[in-house]
Length: 413
Ligand SMILES: Cc1ncc(COP(=O)(O)O)c(C=O)c1O
Image (tube, rainbow, N blue to C red):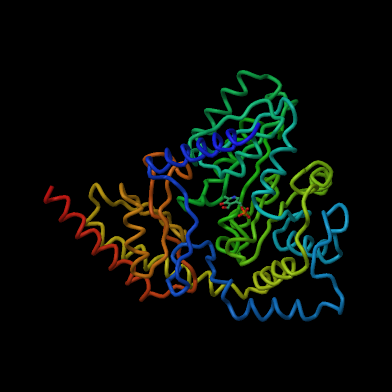
């Protein structure tokens, strides 16, 4: 024992970090000035700074009886449960037109809880290749016999994978084994909306015994897409054909945590088996009150105007970006999908572009592998209901100046 092994460990940790540094993908925590303009966070409705949200939240806190515990008290299965939490689950489930809901401490925990427990031995998970890291973590822990990816947002890709799995395993065709199809409704890095209706058509045609179960992660759709921000599944009116929906509260809802919307048997099963629910301290009253405040605003239609404003800003930013298309050279390319507040500015030097924008007071972030595949590095720009057209003009001007200077430098080489 003694001093050598800790040094050895530290050396290997440092080497790993140096390798990341060399590949320009070492992650660092950063704090940007609060005076900077937010073009980065997932606070799409700007609810976190909304006076209406703050007033409602504080009112919920104030209305709590004296000595009402502000701390959680334990796991949901022990002292962390409350009538308030259960009523909130019912309220959210009703809003989402779902039979029941179960709150987890985060979307990460919800995905891990669902995917690690629900697929049974012999079942198959078929997932979109760009699915979030938390879904990968859940699948890694799952007892499913196989996990197979399909090409991003491709109904043809899903069909090809399903067909080959059904050919290989007659029990799938007979309905004796289950297939779980895991997708996001809006992808976090590209902002594209999944073709859920087409996926449903493929799965219901190939698995007529109804043993194809959809798990849809609505993290980036919550509050932003669908009627009163209820999500893409409700926009399509296909709630009944989706086995599990997962909505997170940490993005547009200015809170923390997530809900799994499912039937009551599935809810019960998760309460019994999901370790990310059982072995962790549940959310305390203040966070539940925050989630309640956000959902009340959604349910009362108070966020619809924010959704509209965001929609107008999306159109404006897209039009302004088109004015930069003359620069659509090797150093800059824009990926954007209609209605999405997430824009991907692809560049070979995303860190440089992000840093220039940050110096000018605009928070945007470079997204590097392994968060996105190699070759898909980008600067991710997120719009918010609280952004202004002037701020967008300022960001566009900064990008334009950078492009002009970079092109000049490249031409001189
Ligand atoms: C698609 C998706 N699912 C799940 C999560 C995890 O949610 P949370 O931040 O609540 O843990 C995220 C967060 O980045 C996400 O983008």
